[in-house]
Length: 112
Image 1: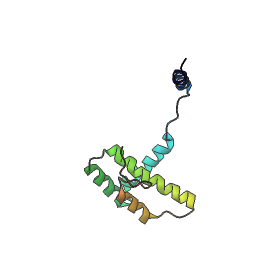
Image 2: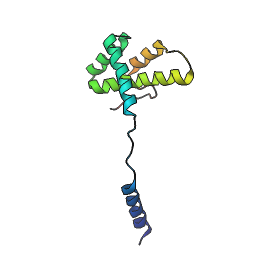
Image 3: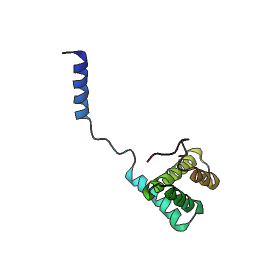
Image 4: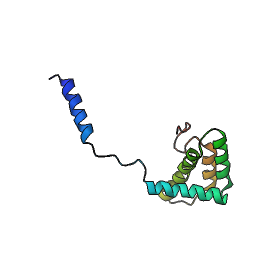
């Protein structure tokens, strides 16, 4: 049996035996982040969250994708606060909202 054929059969067997993949995100954590976004929108605090939502929807993003994009900024700020042991920086948060759809960790627009 040719080497290439043996390799492709082995790869096919491995694919069939792989355990199911876990989701890339924790659904409970995802919902908690979305709840933060929804609370900011409801309370209009900071007002730039609502302004960002309105701007991104006007640019053609879906409401769901817009909430996810804002959630990316929320989660990045939470991560920075926890890892850098620093207080919440509303100025940096608002600046990151204003850069959307460019994600905080990227320099190109997100492609949901």
